[in-house]
Length: 178
Image 1 (cartoon, rainbow, N blue to C red):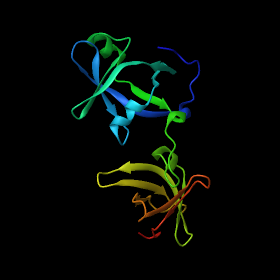
Image 2: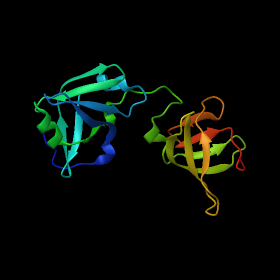
Image 3: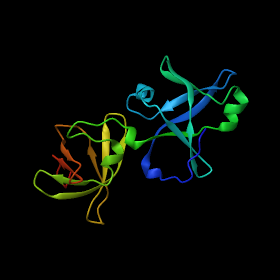
């Protein structure tokens, strides 16, 4: 494992978490936060935060096992070592993410974007993106401080008309009083 001397967390994206151990040789379940869990296999470098420093972690292997991902770190060879390593968060560099098509964005890019409806009314700013089961939902903090957050379903080409990264805005077919 190689240590970086200073950490700017804005350069990294949380992509997975080390889960329960599997077997006696240091294997563990890896919980992916990617929409498609197999997307983990396309990345080459992974990092874990350790005592305020980002450490590169090297996987000996990462493989699909039924609905789970099983992995093993190169430097860990038994169950006690992986338990001592802990259930750490696994990060990738944002710069290693694949380029998206026009009118597409990663969740982390949506946060902070301005929401504007078809009538040109500024509804507020995206605070977070959630998934409550049926679809992704934008939690929007309205400009009027007396109002509660607005929840807007992330349904492309129906509610979400376009995403403009250069203008930091999302055009929606949504009324202020919904």
